[in-house]
Amino acid sequence: MAKQRGVWLDTPKLDDRVLATLLQNTPGYEELFYTVLLGLEPVSVPDLVDRVQSGLPFSAWETFSKYTRLPEKALLELTHISRATINRRKKTGHLESLESERLLRVARVFGKTLRMFRGDLGKAQKWFTTPRSSLGGKTPFEMTISEIGATEVEDVIGRIRYGIYS
Image 1 (tube, rainbow, N blue to C red):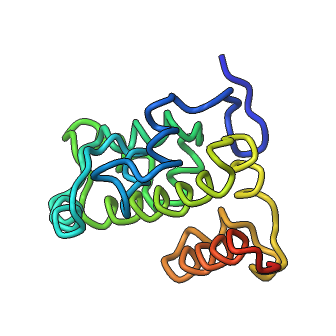
Image 2 (cartoon, rainbow, N blue to C red; image 1 turned 135 degrees about the horizontal axis):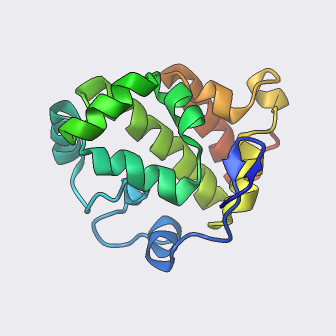
């Protein structure tokens, strides 16, 4: 059984296919590389919008949890979904549109964090849960709860990747 370390469950590394997709511009995944964390096949942005509006399959939730090792309680908090609701979604086999959008947001931001750390899950997890002065003393995890906060985290990641002090 995995030990809990802070918010995250310990894990040695991502699977090689997921890691390769995150770190390279794998054909079909260029802009939407983070969707691999949800177990989704490459799609265009309009197709992804349609899929989100229809509701992602519940397997996207399970796959994201597996790849990121984010405990269910934390993922529920990030996506504003109650435990009872997620249990119902498991039975129906799909998420609702807003739930899908929130899960996609978390995958997008965490995927960019993983890419920034060249796929090192441990470093990405630590960065994601450490307060940042550039985020007003909040953690990227806390900020990702809302779209505006997620956008700010992405801006910080962009500045770091381009060597701008953040």
